[in-house]
Image 1: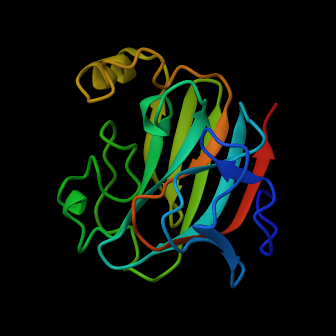
Image 2: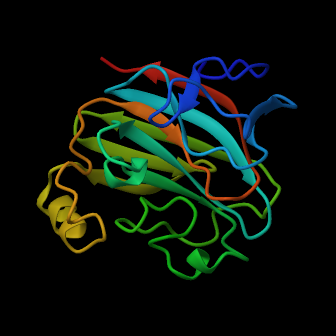
Image 3: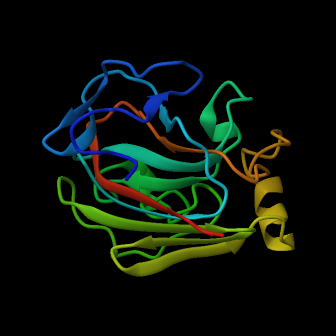
Length: 194
């Protein structure tokens, strides 16, 4: 378990030694209740299967980062992100590249998989070597390989291009994004893969 449902133990703010008051363990969920900044696990993971559930307020935006380091001023300049979004009311929902389930700005997710705002969505994220699978509500929505020609071309054409370490970490923290909206994560579990 990465979250015990009762405390914020095992989590801290990106680039800081502790977690801010903007994140609380509330009703069995790790919840962004106010300005809190992005948070990361205290532990790092290389090959893993992460499962969790998330729900977000109407027009809300957040994300799940993986293999994050703290060598850039913002987590999104080094770690890929699985988008968490209310597709129906947030403008990012108009593009499949930035809609719920997408590998943000790199690989699109199909429409019609995400549940409406304030409903729980199930995530399974498998990262094994260079292979990544992102699952949303039981559907594999994204699959790619770090370092492949396709990956390199997509990164080169994205806003991440100037950041030479983006997506290069072999291990790192799991991160949850504070994008200014009420968002909750529960049943956060990780299984380390060999």
